[in-house]
Length: 89
Image (tube, rainbow, N blue to C red):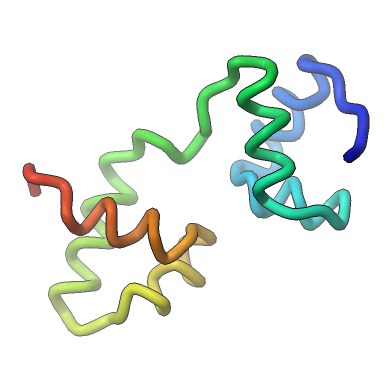
């Protein structure tokens, strides 16, 4: 796992946005980036994004699959389905 300072991680998060994008930069797994983020106590930049979530819900209702939406929004399919199953839409 790469050694990344908290300040550097925050810079990368602002620039690259997602754990997946940061992971690609270092050629490691998204889970490894998640662990680094948790170690520093940094919230995910995509965790609470009502505009993105509304778009995901809208596209899903129009027929897009969870897998398609996961790829489009660079999220795991589990995260997409979590968004889709939230009680308030």
